Image (cartoon, rainbow, N blue to C red; front, side, top):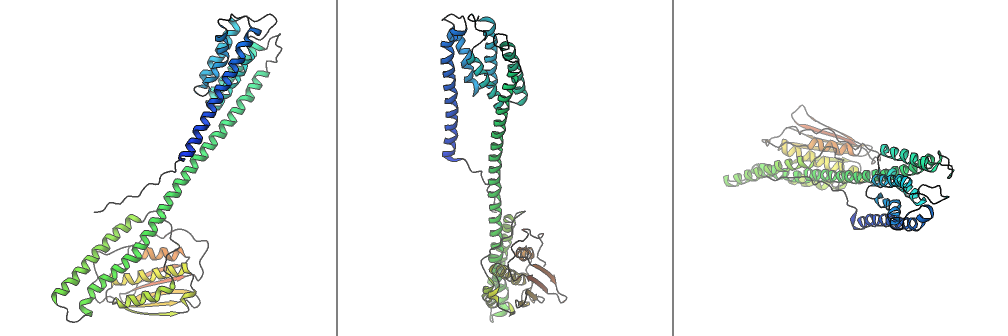
Length: 414
């Protein structure tokens, strides 16, 4: 017993160059953060003595509290903001200003706070962003809206609000881009899955229409050989029976494989290889295999478009195979009228030999699917004399807008 499994398509990875581009982007962002921090620290240290009365020994520490929290933008922006805001409040309370200076902390410290508020808006939840905006507005409004500074207290919430708005806007754009990339990956996955389904449908149809057809002819030849060939001894008769049994077993296994390959939602195949011009060879081959076949054609088969002709060929092929499977020895009449419209009729009488058992399949469903794929229709029904009739009406031209649906699966009648 063979086990079959459908391979799951994998989403295409970004590849080496894509990963390298992302890594380089991180390097650029980290490098820019370090550079800005170094510049702020380099400015904060020497200018600290202009605005504050601070000993040389602790000046680097005060400058570090003003600039170094910016390094936490990439690691933890809310923590960096908390350190910067807390140190600003501590410096304002503990470090005295130079005479005539009204700023409680350095301009560098204000710039660092703006950087950190922007980073919080870019990477943190909106609720936390609102808290950071409100706390920073309160801190700057209370500390800098003094008589000496002369700033409007409402200027800080507005300017900080603009910074937060820009951060949230960029955050939305980044998220939209990420969602677009995710949807693109899902689309690629769905496209790969549909490609696999289409390939499975093509394999299933070709397997059924080609292999099963010829295997059915082998069964018919093996069963009818003792009646067509004279002087068949018992050993030869037993050999023919063995060939027929082996072929029937192979057909049953093909049916099982066909059931695995067919999938829900499969698309109809629009480009089978045979055309209407190959029907003559199909009729001759079936007659040589022992099928009591007569046929007539009105009109010119070569004028039928290839897509419609392919469907016509497969329907005739399956109809003849069904006769061999379910009505051995029956007379078959095939009529094709393509003079004005394209109509196919395959009629067989009752079988003269024993019909094999255990051979049922999806022949009628496959024929109906092929007719529907080119914009036609097909009916199959028993006749009053115990035979069977298949009638198909197909268009002369290939439709350009067809429903990609297939009729419900049916079992071939016994």
